[in-house]
Amino acid sequence: MGKPTLNRKCVTGKELEDGIQKGLDTLYGVALTAYGCKGGNVMIEHRASAPTISHDGVSNLEELEVEDAIQDMAIKVVKQSSKRTNETAGDGTTLSAILSYHLYRWAKNKIAAGESAMSVSKEIEDIVPSILEKIDEQTTKKLSPDLLKGACIISAGDEGLGELIYDVVSEVGEFGGINVSYVGSLGVSTNIVRGMYIPSGYSDPKLINDLDGNRSVLDNVPVIILSNTITRQDEIIPILENIRTHNFQKAVFFADITGDALKVLELNRNFDSCVVKPQSSNYEILLKDVALYTGGKVYSGKAEDYKLQEYAGMAGTITITPRETTILEGKGDKAEIDRVVADLKDKLSKAEPQDRAFLENRIARLTANVATIYVGGASTVERGEVKLRVDDAVCASKSALAGGVVPGGGVCLRDIGKALNLPYLQRPYLDLLANAGIEDEEECAEGSGYNLKTREIGNMLKSHIVDPAIVVREAVINSHSVISKLITTQMALAYEDRAWNF
Image (cartoon, rainbow, N blue to C red; front, side):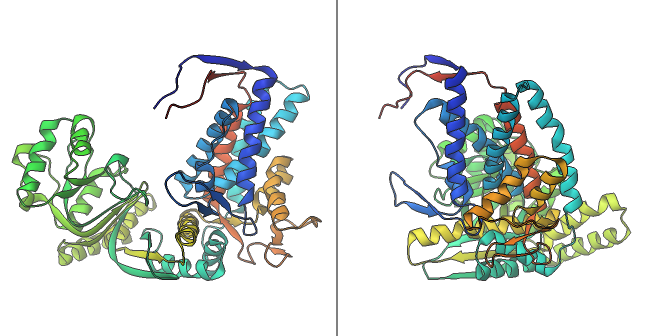
């Protein structure tokens, strides 16, 4: 399939401006529909399966495409910004899209009043540090159990579900792993086991074996840990042949595999594999920890000398998503793991402040629990909708643990907007009120706002209505970045005929 022509047309002036605005209007409408606990759901059509009904901003915006070229390009540009927020903070897709919309309208009003697009763009870039500084001032770093529970409940949109997720997060901690899976029964249940969590996902989506879940799950799998970068066929084929001689048709590689070597894995359909390249400044240490936990060794020799029995680790189950990897039932020597952990704890007690985070991360990695949340439901639609909310709440809780929380319900940005005279920062708060049917807004003190469920006004932190600070920060950074560029766009190059051949 492909576009019938590569010819492009130049779009400028009012046609361009109107197209961008209409595209953002459409994006805003979709984002706003599911914004906040009182927002609704979006029904999404699929060509080869049943529709989904989603309250999840990532899913809603990801599926949005329109026919008009300019509108579609504007939507895709802002979607990239929102997706970046979700990738870095684990949540905040909807906030990023809504903030981008209001910032664009504010910027265009300034341009209409006589300011140049370049000067407004520079102003947008210059105000970001001030906003981030104000967010830091409002951030509560040390979370009480009630504040963490509040972050879970707000993101899940359901008190019972939020409390269940809070219990799981409290058990595994900030560095523990949490998998979310479907189950045939009704309701939501959990299971917590000992495991290793790594905040790095698969490096090649073509190798995943669960397309619906966008992940790979491999049971009773050998773990191949390579310190050398593998790029050529002759560097990977001897290792694969050695694995097969031991009657394994699968393996997980913790290695940097690229080029022709990666293509060998992609084209080898009779071999179930996945590649994880840990994203860590302490790459070699992380590989050693994986080897320790799985009972393997880090290999740096020639490919033809690789021996599975001597170097490979083993694991009961490895689950690999775009963002994280969890290893369950590693076959490493527990006594050796305990010895290493005890040594790390001893070093931690004597470490300088700048070294503590590294040691704490290693201890957590080697001792962390891994939880699985099983999501059931009476229908595929129900299970899918609940799973998306669980995923959101898990990500939000981890972000809260990592970076603290700010007053929720749009109050944080509202107060910053008032302090810095930036009215567009107040709009997400007003959007939340509108979705909750609150039309007559009362003036609220700093840090106070509406509990959208009870319609009562109170202090957000005391009411445990909070947002992860990282989410708000990333939404600000990414929305301002994309809009500062979008308002300076004076020409678009669109295909003359965007129809696809089927």
